[in-house]
Image 1 (cartoon, rainbow, N blue to C red):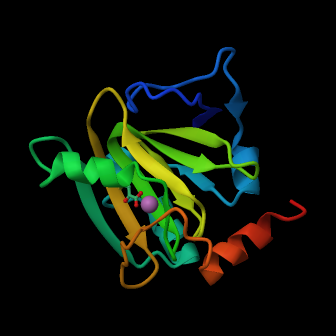
Image 2: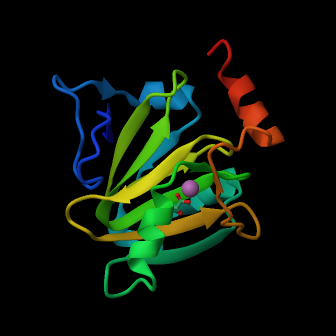
Length: 178
Ligand code: KMT
Ligand code: NI
């Protein structure tokens, strides 16, 4: 089971867990209500995994590539990490599959509170288009992730505020009554 929790608002190192005391967990069901989908897969066999294949077919995730985030392998490491941690949205779903290492995705809930999602090896997650979110390494400083996309990838991020986009309006409307 993937673990998620509400975080505090302290400015301490972003790589720390930032749990509230007492911890305030968020369930998979809660995540689903804000459009965040999750699958647990066997990352050791990602190259031939029929389960991954099935998800890709069902969801239309035609594109994949692999990104390794480590100081010595990712060009402009510090700059990129800083960018990833700016609150932003995309016009398409953000789909990530952790093949090795770990990382955090933070997403806003309906009341704009930050939820931290702890991604470990085997976690595949879809953040819906239009959701405000950000990404950070944890204290292990290493992630290898597959990036998936429906069609030709567009990595453009729009930092908050980006409320004028139709996809943002569509997303907030989808939260009503759920
Ligand atoms: C994004 O847009 O938030 C990212 O691409 C995060 C880093 S990919 C593991
Ligand atoms: Ni993003």
